[in-house]
Length: 467
Image (cartoon, rainbow, N blue to C red; front, side, top):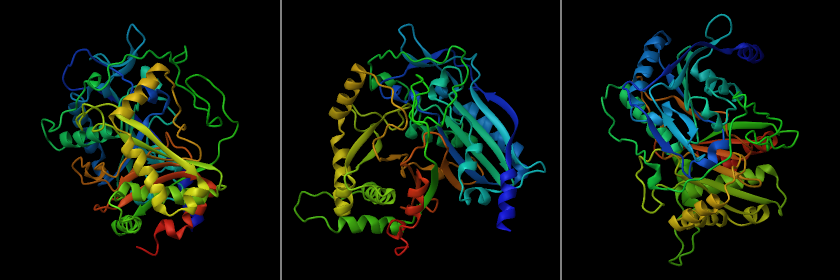
């Protein structure tokens, strides 16, 4: 029976029914904003993808699409860079430009189809062990942000399911980070629910945080054809054609759900061993869960004691820069923070050893450190690949602080929120709040297949005895 169901699922394909574009409802004229040092390193990353599932009656699909497009036309009046294109000014400095003649946001309407109609519902999709099929529900797979010179900076795929709707979004990561992404998503939902104005306006002046003009010699191929991403060359740079290894390891992705009880016990256990010296600071929930993941992944990889391992955090700098920027700053205002040690040291010491390294790295990344990093990059701009996060790394993106389950377009909160297939590599972790709220956290991890198999058997990591 299971084999029959699996064969049926293999036949399921996403069938595109219609493609349109949505522009801001009002004429806005010409608008431009310079990409700054916080934005430019992401040009060689891929479009950032988010996927939200909603349970509603399938008969309401056309009505929902109309509502979403209408709300999108309104929210783009404020988030107009997403309706524009990348470009360069006369000095070769990258910018985002919008004018009323541009296409705007691409909207793709699709259904799940096996030749006889829709066969899969939301529970069928989010409950699958093999997550690779989910990439079909999100547009712009394997598309570099540099393609924004010719492509829309936002594409939305609305896929009709048996019992609901999948909203897949692809955002150009050179234009915005996670904080701005979820500000946009919540604002879009706000307009879909009948609001005529947004309570929190996006802050668009990026030069308030960095004025340095950096010229980059990056461009699309002369044919302007979409970049072909050769996944057999994981370290090859599609922007400059540099070669990479011949074979890419097979990755698996999985979501591990940590209840509020489990999260609290991880945190309380590590903090119970702090020395009473008046100097040691308690570890935060993020730091406690981070070292829990780092140690478990290191063990699952079966690294040698002398092998290095790196922990990377893509950290929001809005409150760290001087002067601080508002939460509504629209763009990229993140930097990668690194810490590392030998695998043997990480595993031989108690968890507070690794947590202390993470805590120190976060605390040291102040305005001075941020400015120094920017100055070094501006003096010698290097366009890293999305995988350049460190050796045997665990890299954390997204945040459980993002209120992803509050994105209600008028038919209830999402059943599930996931990341797309872009920008995944061995050790990439996305953190989301759990659907049940409170302090529950969903941990979405990509690992090589053997390491994932080992992680799935790690009872200490899974907190099976705790839940």
